[in-house]
Image (cartoon, rainbow, N blue to C red; front, side, top):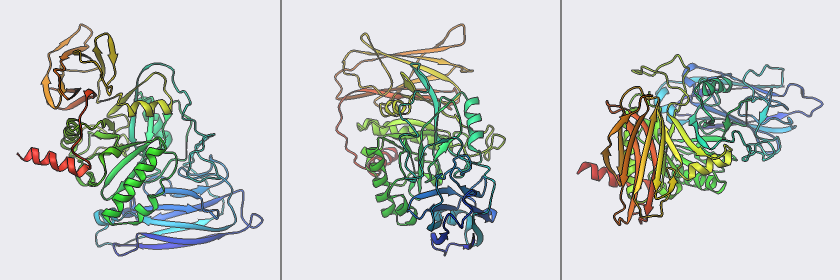
Length: 505
């Protein structure tokens, strides 16, 4: 069996092409080989296209962005010969759909008035799979892109210590537009000392993983023209994703985003807005209710051009939301796409997994506990350094993200390790930033202390921040809070407009 399709890519084309192929009965097909899709494309087409294959039982069997990585995409009975993003299982006879789609935002950015060509060949002829899922498959062949409970346990214990666990909540591999294979990404993650890793590909899910000692939490980056957001702990492909990918109408896209967020929340997942002020990828989904947002990415790829300005604005905006009573927690994400030897324009260091690092405090490390502690805000974000916050009220200790019921003074002590120069430490209380005195011990560890009184405020929140003497970001500790505040702002747009008005005055 062999079918060939050719597409001329231009701004005038439909955003999605659908083909139907007929898979012969098992007596006629090469059942030992599987189904293979060979993609040939002009270099300029990378990132622009995506491929979805749906079997005769209407289950998605493959989803992949046509970026970097192997362009021979295979579906077989085994996860060790099925490409990443695929669902292993029977190659059922009957009509299969091949859907080729284009991201319209990339057409505008990269193609302009040019045209380009993509050719897709579907065959059952034997083909080597060089980027297979591996032994650990999250899904089964009966339910498509749905995490199977028997294949992935949210209660599997990876480590048993009570400690701050280090990881990365925003990463990419060759399943979307990253340049690292899954195995190479794992090598880098281990080298960086990570305990957990969240793959967040653009609009596609990993369906399995290679052998690793790290906790792998399934994720996805919902990528639209109005901005990007991550889902941590995704269990199924969002129902509204197909509609979202087809639409260029901002109102429809935002409605789809809201549906996807609600669906993910019902499944116990976490919603995090990505790089909200980053250049052309800033968040423009103004109609999104703030109550649907769990986290905000305050530090995204600090090596990227424009990163400092956009990250500092994200921190300021999250402070503004806290001042309005919204309990939305800050996380970090490397958003790493490149190989180690590459640099962005003007960068002096590589964009790499684990920079920034996000630390989550867990008594034991399981996927479910990781999610729960992120929801509670027991989270720190750092670059280069390690910090240990100690928050004490009376005789009780608290973690960042905690609600404090007592009206006694908060004693905030912060320990800073692996810092090469004297840091600047701030305590931020209800938006007011105060620099603290920093002292150093003989072993090079730095310390700072603050005491914060309640004084009967209706609403009080306190966090810590560490910077270099040049003002570069080093660490962020999520707030503790007490009291209540009735929020004025309902949507993202409401809050952003209010902050911009304050800044203008």
